[in-house]
Image (cartoon, rainbow, N blue to C red; front, side, top):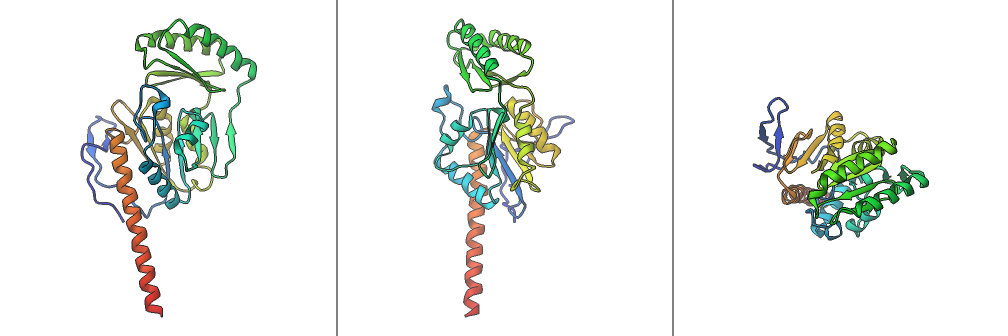
Length: 285
């Protein structure tokens, strides 16, 4: 069963040879088995001046829960935020998660998988970053334990200086790597990425054997798109910019509309199944 709705000017497929876009005319087959992965900021929720101001609408959370139930729990949030933050934003629901760009992950059974940074290294990096970032008014340091984010949304004039600072950190500690994002540069353990997190989920129940679908908006999501493409899934870039994703949605409101279409179809399918069950029961008595 397909939802025959045209999302013109919202979701578009990009041809690799010339980057010309084409409209996608359908949402995914509801009868197919999908594994759902969603970035949060800029995908499920609008980006705000400060991360603490971000909210995921209740209707979207309810839709995610419905989607998770319909896919036997094969839905995860994949974000640069910590798992603690993701849980707070997803309340009252509790989904599998990958936080800090895959440096921490919680599977369907609640087991956590965390890349640890030696305390001495984390402390030394934190001290150096706190000392230097004070020179750049408006910039903010977010310490995530095993990773660090240098935010400059309120001070874009410091972008180059903060990038140089982050590069210097990775030169001193080669086990760390840079990750650029929208108005942020992150310093994280080398080898961690959203792509690695998605790949790990896809080797576990209930994700294994399903077709992955990943929606994301930032450079940090490109590794996830690459993994999903390799697995024959559906990669969706939110917003403008070059991407490895096969499809595109114009913005967060379009993500909400797309999810609403899917969840509405799921609810209708569930109602139809109930009606069929009732008719079968009625004929049997």
